[in-house]
Amino acid sequence: MIVNINYEPMTLTMSTPWVWLDPAVDPSYDAPVTTEDSRFRGELAVADLFPATTLEQWRALAEQGLKGASLDSLFAETTEGVAVRSLYTAGDLSGLEVEPMGPVRRPWQSCQQVRHPIPESAGAEIAESARFGIDAAWLLLDRSVRRALPPDELDFDADTPDGLVVSTAADMSLLLDALGATIPALYLDAGGSALATASVLVAAVKANGDDPAELEGGFGSDPLAALAADGVLPGGLDRALAQLPDVVNWCDRSAPRLRALSVTSLPYAMSGASVVQELAYMMATAVAYLRATTRSSVSVDLTCRHLRFVTTSGRDLLLEIAKLRALRSMWARVVQACGGSDESRIPRVHAVTSPRTLTVRDPWVNLVRTTVEAFGAVVGGSDTVTVLPFDDAIGQPDTLARRIAALTHALLRDESHLHRVIDPTAGSYALERLTADLAEHAWALFQRIEAGGGMEATLIDGTIRRELARIRDLRRRAHADGREPITGVTSHPDPDEQWLDRVPPDVSGQRARLHESLVSRRPPRNELERLGSAANIAAGDGAVMDAAIDACAAGATLWEVAAAIAGCERPTTVEPLPSERDAAPFEDAPAPREAS
View 1 (cartoon, helix red, strand yellow):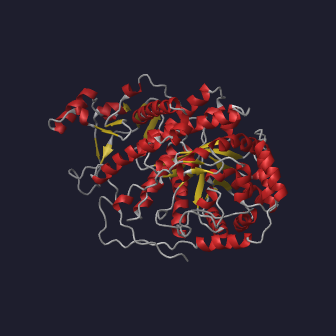
View 2 (spheres, helix red, strand yellow; view 1 turned 90 degrees about the vertical axis):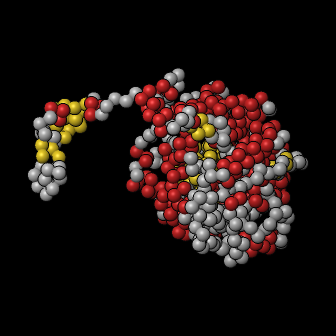
View 3 (tube, helix red, strand yellow; view 1 turned 180 degrees about the horizontal axis):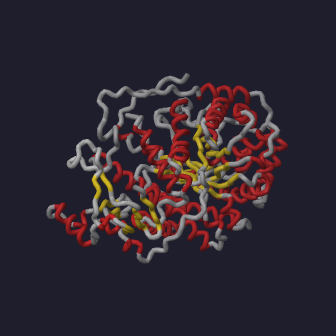
């Protein structure tokens, strides 16, 4: 029997009568049974094989199954007040302007997060990830770097590893040396010291004989997110925003493949933010940066070209896909209102599997979580995706965990072929409706933030902290009463579980080595004075960045550069947002191991 499938219209053309094997007629299956039924001859419309079912019939059957309960109960309301219904129809798209997602990077860029405190080890991890097929590295810097604190002036637990610990271009060169010949795309996350850290990196690249123009990745300048996460900006918020045009112009002139600015929702997500809050906070932050750059005659299009959005992809698959699609539609609306070009309306999105959803108990379940979250990130249209290792919440990930995280990209790309479809959810009744609902709720919150003075004012006056505390409390109750179970922790726990352990790296030894190497050093005063002058007369033309790179090349430390840029400006301080995993209140983690 030959079956030909004709897709326009969807029909089945059969060259012989329908044939099947019926064990009731012939248990040996040796004699096929044929039918002369006219339904199975000639051309068939697939819909003719099934009885037509109306929405009213579905409602009637649903009401029977509910045994007296209201049909309106067949929905779930998210923490942001968005109703997720059990059935969506074509009527849900009535009045919606359903548009394609627009160009995205296919295949997506696979990016590995690196937070080892020792430069040589961090470089070795990046080189190892490259062998696993990873395209980019996302360098998380230590709190001392983010806040521009010298090794001997720390006001936190110095023994807890928190990210890469460096002070000079020579330290960064150790990382680059460990990479070998090829430097992958590098993304920095340096908090309030983004410009100083970027200068250290560029100075090290030049010292190694490489051309900064060949660098790909981003500097990650995001002062509002840094203030939210760390609670302090070393030169003040006004000064930090005034630096953004300088970094944008320097990148555009000297390293066009780098993106100078980031807009990240991670500090808010780790503090319990809903998807609506993440979207609204990102839009409000992006608008604040557009204001800061265009104030210095940087065009909207240029700012957009050097901006990337960094957000989480959580475990609620449909909502997270809709969130990423809503981000694109909201950004297009913002750029259109600002007079940007059609090309500028397409955001560059970097999604990371949510660190908030990781568990310490039964961490093997995290393998499934991160795979689902990475799937959502890709289907939602992310250009860059980071898959966190399954043991990331326990400590420094080991080689096995990093390898599985890296190969998750290969599984989704090479075996599942997710990169072959640009927008697989386009036209879905449920996802198009959810996308529109999330965008509507998020836009309303974004407008309230703007009416309250913008992201700067609402962050400093505590409004955002209070909003997040309310949502965090709602989510914690949902986890506690089983409405939102955490598999392996609040549901189906393993009573005989053996805790997985990770030995932390020796960050105290790294800090001591840095301090010892700087004791007898003479600061490059001429270069630092020139940097201070450039910072005071900054015109947003890249002069501050050039002077900072020269100072780093002459041996200036990261905190000396940050202090020269800050000048006499006082830091802006707020109470940092709390950072908590969903499972943390329900876990009794073992005591941490001693560093090796």
